[in-house]
Amino acid sequence: MIDIFNYLSSNSYPGRGIAIGKSADGNEAYLIYFIMGRSVNSRNRVFVENADGSVRTKAFDESKLTDPSLIIYAPVRVFGEHTIVTNGDQTDTIYNSLRDGKTFADALRTRGYEPDAPNYTPRISGLATIHNGKLSYKLSILKKSCASAACDRFFFEYENTAPGVGHLIHTYKSDGNPIPSFEGEPAAFACDKDFESLADGIWNALNEENKVSLFVRSISIKDGSYKTKIYNKNQ
Image 1 (cartoon, rainbow, N blue to C red):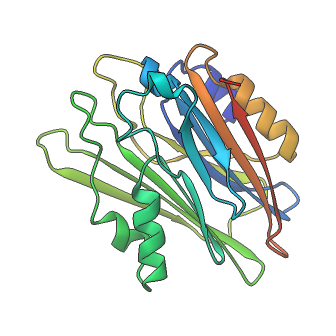
Image 2: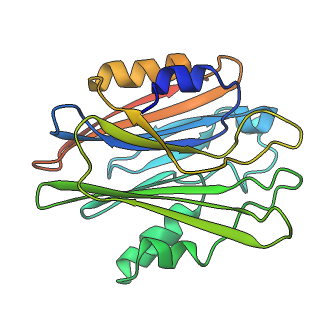
């Protein structure tokens, strides 16, 4: 397993990232979502938590907002025992799919990568489910095929994961022009820090120039109660 702090600090631009795991004592689920940006429009954002446990992005300075289509969305929504985390408006697609009795994969098979040529940013999504005292979770990445405009869809499922283990997926392999997409399976990381140390450590590990916002949530696997920390570079 990787050290998530070293992994992130060694990459100046992993883009947007989702991580889900279980605390070392096995009592809590951890959900993480971070965003980074290179343009003024991308950096002009903050996370705001709503009363229902959802999170939305908001322009920090409305006068600088030029194109809201791919940067203003709800990255986090809650549906019963499920918490959805994504890097775009597919959060709503997944929420509606679960509400209609369909699945995480059903929802994402109707979506594709972002239409932001030449980067074609992948859509990454996560779904954490706490049921009968057990945590299971799913991760997905939808990205442009290397040989055509087709969308390649990848799904990863983790059932009743061991304490102290998590998995991280992010949009970009590294910085570049165009930016290369993430490759391979989600990275397994040692999820062995307490909530505060994990949250602070990830925020401090993200590149200072490019980081924008970070969401970290701890959910009790026993009773579903949760606590949230949000970091915004723009204050």
